[in-house]
Structure formats: C-alpha cells, structure tokens
Amino acid sequence: MKSFKYLSQNGFLIKPIVQTISIKPIISKQNIIQFLNINKRNYTTNKYLYSCGCGIDGKLGIDNELVKFESFPTKLTKFDNGENNGASQRYQDNLECKDIVCGHYHTMLVSKEKDQLYSCGWTSFVAMDRVNKETNFKSIIPSLVTPLKDFKIKQVAGGRRHTLVLTEDFRVFSFGVGSEYQLGVGSTENQPLPVEIESLSKLGNIIKLECGWGHSLVLTSDGDIFTWGFTQDSQTGHGFSEEPIHIPKMIKTNYKFKNIFTGSDFNLAITNDGRVCSWGSGEFGQLGHGDTKNVEAPKLIQSIQPLVHTNLINTNRIYEYKMVACGFSHALIIDNDGKLLTLGWNGNGQLGSGVKGDNHLVPTKLEFDFDGEKVVKVSAGRNHSACITESGKLYIWGNGNKGKLGNGKSVGDQLTPLELIDIDENNTDPSNQKVLNISCGFDHTIIELLLNE
Image 1 (cartoon, rainbow, N blue to C red):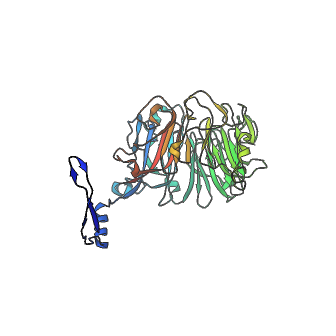
Image 2 (image 1 turned 60 degrees about the horizontal axis):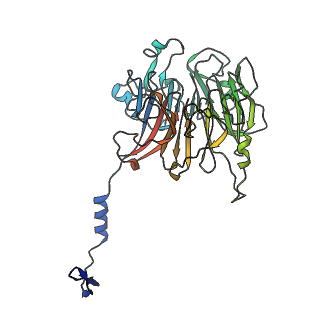
Image 3 (image 1 turned 120 degrees about the vertical axis):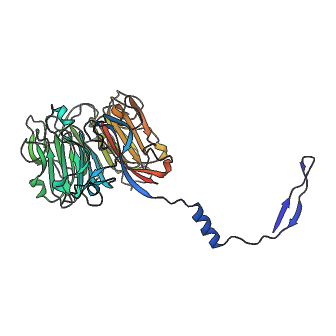
C-alpha cells in the first residue's frame, strides 16, 4: 500500500513524497477473540429491593427497629422465609419479587420463585396503642405470611390497615382491620390471620383487587366490579349511604372494565375500550370532572374522552389510556403515547407542575420531557408521586418529609420530577442500573432495582 509523508521546511508543509511500504496482515480471528476477552467486563445481574421514608413502624424492612426514617434508599438485606431449621436457613439476604405493594403502615411483597407472600410493618389493630405498636407489634423485616405459604399468590393490595390477597387459583383472602366491613366477610371484627372471602372465591374469575382506606374492590374477567366497605363518599359506587356495604356487591353500570385503581376514598377504572371512569370523593378534583363534587357511580371523564379512537395521523389507531395510579387525593394517568396526565390535590407539588396549591380539576398534561422517554409505570402515595421510563429511569416528586423521596432530604417539597440516580450506594455508574418497579405508600417508598455488578 502507499503512505504519504509530509516534510516540513521552515514551518511550512511541502509536497508529499510518496513512499511504498508493505504491511503483513496481523489481525486474525484468534486476535479478535483475545482482544474481546481482555476488554470484556463480566457482570453479574441481580435484583434488589430498597426502601426510604418513615420507618418507625417497621415497614421499611431494613432490620433496624430504632430507625425513624431513611432519606436515602436503603437495601433490604434480611428476609424471614419461615424455615424452622436454624437461622442459617431461615434468613436469606435477598428476595426476588414479582410484586411490591405499600400500604399505609405496612409493606407486602410477592416472591418470584415460590409466589409466596411476605410482609413487614405494624401488625397491631389498636389505633391509639402507638407505644405498643412501635415495640411489640411490628415486623421489622419482610417475613413469610405462613398461613398462606402453601398458596401461590397472584396479587396483593394494601390499604390503610387492611390487606387483600388473590391466589393463582382465584381465591380471595383478607386480613387486618374490619371496622368498616372492608374485609368483605360481613363482620367488623379485626382479622389477624387471613380469612377467605368465599363469595368472591366461588366466582372463580377475580383478576384484580384494590384497597382504599376503608373500602375494597375487585375486578372480574367479565369486566364487572364488586365493592364493599365504607361508602359515605360514594366510593363503593352504589351511591351515598351512612351504612357501609357489608359484603361484596356488584356495581350496576353499562360499562365493562379491564383495570381498576383506588385512592383513599375514590376510584378510577379503565374501560374495555381504553376510556377512563371515576367515582367517589371529588373534594380536591381528583375525579377529573371539572368540579369538587362526589360521584356516586362510575362516570366517564369527558375532558379526555375525545382522544379515544381519534388520531389525526392514523385514524385507524386506537388511542387508549394504559395505566393509572391513585394517591390519597390525586391521580396520575399514562396515555397511549407514554405521556403523563395529573389531576387532583397538589398541596405539596405531587402533580409535578412546578408549583403547589393549584389543584387540577381535570386531567392535565405534565409538561416534563423525561429525557425524551415514554413513561411506562406510575405510583402515587399520600402526597408524593413516582414514575419509571422505558429505559428504567426513576423520577420522583412531591412531599419529601421523612425522606420518602430518597433524595437525601427529610423535609421539603420537590415540585417537578427529579431523576433518582444514586439508588445503590455502592454503584457509581447509572448505566449499570435499571428500575423495575416502584410503590409509593403513605409515607414510604419501595424500589426494585436491576443492578449489574
């Protein structure tokens, strides 16, 4: 081959001299393999759980009964699997999960390997017995719910002080506080152990369940919704009543649904054709109907319905809403394009609009770019919000009291979405991590992270 040499004379380049040289090929398949092996880093991919926020009740699951709050995400490193063959077998240092759920005072996990239910947090039902609850009646690490250990758990939902569980064979169980008939067994008695809601199990087609503060609801594969419990804000969908609904009762409506979501005293549901209905308390505009009135039965949110089945570029494209998260009195909605809509209470900036106090009475597009990515998952707590983008980035915003935003602060509000990068304290490269799941509780947050180590 030919190469060109430029000679310099008094600082100037002059005409190149052409010189012919020969190069023997030195690159071989073996050379390439050796080069790749030298420069290849061997990763071990693991999934871990992290928690932040209020910890006085044990719901952070971090094996420290003295901690009051954690303002940075803290890895969960101890899980009680219920084995009775000694501590070395009973406690494990990690638990891969297929579902993570935050209630008010507790956290629920469903293991991936055996589909078993784990829980941590307060287990006392005596509301005024705070001193005892903080000492004698809490589980500070995720522990196997042994009465259900032989069932494969499909889904779990946590409310203020009660829990619903769905098994793979479509049986439904409840436990916790029953003061408002929210356990669905026709009684106000508290249930420290899981009890079966036989009327729902007999249906054999329950596919989703949700817990509010004092009410509960489930969705069937036929698109019907059954509700029960506290109904003074019409959150059961059966109209206003001073008397709670004692047992599961189907909502009478012309709509069929494919997903349901619950806040403290209101609900949103996605219809089979991708539209959104809401009902219950509208005190802060969280129902999205442009006012603060309560709604007694599922009602379409009209301000976003024109988007359904309408697209100027492709008229054959079905435009629908994918996912919803309900907080205490606010909600987040993901649309067909991965954009985020927010509505309801904004007292602490939980709507992410950059200001606080301006409640949204209708769903309002969040003008935030998320680095050009689509939003694929959302979660909402009492007054904080979070979302995950398609590449696994986590954004969080709203009230940061007690450290629940995980940004190192224990007070103050974050008014716009903040990317949470430093999730694992030992990981210095954000490209090595991907957030898989997020759940926002009343005052705490649980994160599932995929980490290349």
